[in-house]
Amino acid sequence: MQRPASYTPNIQIGNIAYGAIQHLAPNDDTQRSLQAQAASVLTALDEVRSLLAAQSVPSISIPMLIILLFWLAIIFVGFSVLAPPNGTAILALMVSAVAVSGAIS
Image (spheres, rainbow, N blue to C red):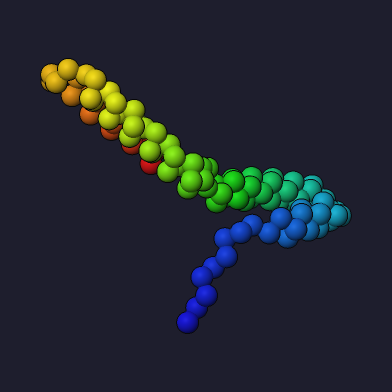
């Protein structure tokens, strides 16, 4: 049985690779161009790795999400109890509930 792959970025490997590319001693223009291209590719790869690391952390904690949902449910129940029962009020509450649920998920 295979273990799942680890998606945590290893920053030290990227730094070692970048340092190795910078310590190369090019002999001609072609090698200098290839060294610059390798450094730019590694920099772009580092940006993607940083983005993946930032996106792997959840943006909101589960307890905060539960509190937010409970608070929004109280607000919508309060508005629906106080609003007169007509089509406009019901439609406005439904549209705002869909908008809030779409923003949360």
